[in-house]
Image (cartoon, rainbow, N blue to C red; front, side, top):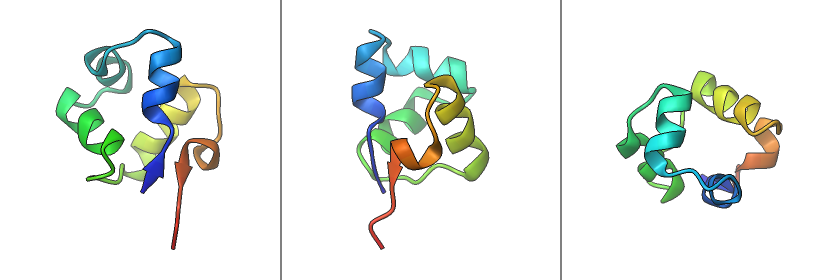
Length: 64
């Protein structure tokens, strides 16, 4: 699933590890989501959206 996580993270000057800690997942999970190799669960997607003060739809793009 395409997403804007890397750009949003860069705007805040956060590392993948910083974001992972804030969302309570591993750095590897953040890396996989950013590289579009893994789709986050709904609870994780909501935590990411809340952290960035965006909607899930503003961060994650479903191309189906």
